[in-house]
Image 1 (cartoon, rainbow over the protein chains, first blue to last red):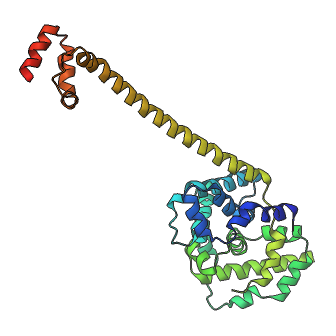
Image 2 (spheres, each protein chain N blue to C red):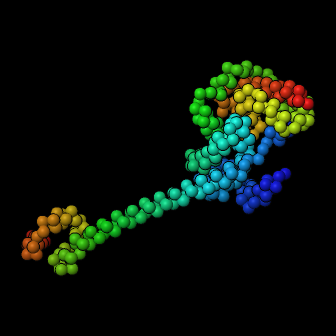
Image 3 (cartoon, rainbow over the protein chains, first blue to last red):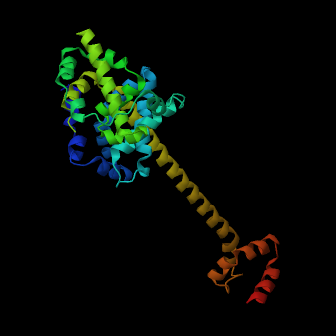
Amino acid sequence: MSSKLSKLLRSPVVLAYAGLTDEELMAKIQQGSLSAYEALYNRYEVSVWNFMRVKISDEQARLDLAQDVFLRLFNSASLFKTDQAFRPWFWAMIRNIIIDHFKRKDALSSSMIKEEIQDDQMSEDQLFNDPTFDLLVQKNHSEAVENCFNNLTDSQKEVLSLQLFSGLSLQEIADQMKVKTGAIKSLLFRGKDSLMKCLERCA
Amino acid sequence: MKKNNWNNLQKKLSREAPTSLRQNVFSQIELERNNSFLKIGMIAASLMTVAFISFWSWQKTSMPLIEDGVVESIEMQELLENQELFAEVDAMELEEEDWQILIGATI
């Protein structure tokens, strides 16, 4: 664990709000609590940043957009209904910010539907519990994994990064992308397959 | 959902966010909050100024009449209710004698 992370985990803010759900933190933010916002920021900083890394290659643009995400989270807190789930709301907001950034000229959802076939018959166990894939990832350096990841198609990268960093379920990801769950599974399978082939070559 | 094997992939792809992100976000929020407080303060100050000017204006036009005993027979409440009429009459720049006639007519 990095020193930054361990310091963060011991901070009074994290300890004070550790037991609260995201939705409860949002309710506190709506009442004007900056500490609650900091606690929520700490929970999502790394995942948002890593999702942005996949989507935005330009370092400065990525930093600006990540900043925009967290500022919008603070400024739009009053719009959040505390009886709804936080994560889908938050990740929908992130995706909208990114789509706005690209001015919708490359609408990923629609390109994804054209590109990928649907297959509802794939098993999640087969997808997520594959020892060969795990071993390949373990054997390779981070740089190699990242290079292979960057070679995936935009839609594969988006779905894989949502799966890895957002904590959303497949159904929730499908809802975000406005496609069927089968299409998401299909993208994950294809992405994983491409990653495996690339990592085999690197190994 | 089981996703144990993907945890390795997640670890390999994860990087820490730059410290500048946190600094930028929180300094921006601090700035926005300060601006909001400043706006609220300015609105409050404007309202207080308007209230003060109204009171000052009322005092300037009405108090001399009350102090001089010109309108001593008129209740303060009536004075307030008829402020508009008084302002109109005041604008006529009547002499004290005319005032007394006018007051006598209204009682």
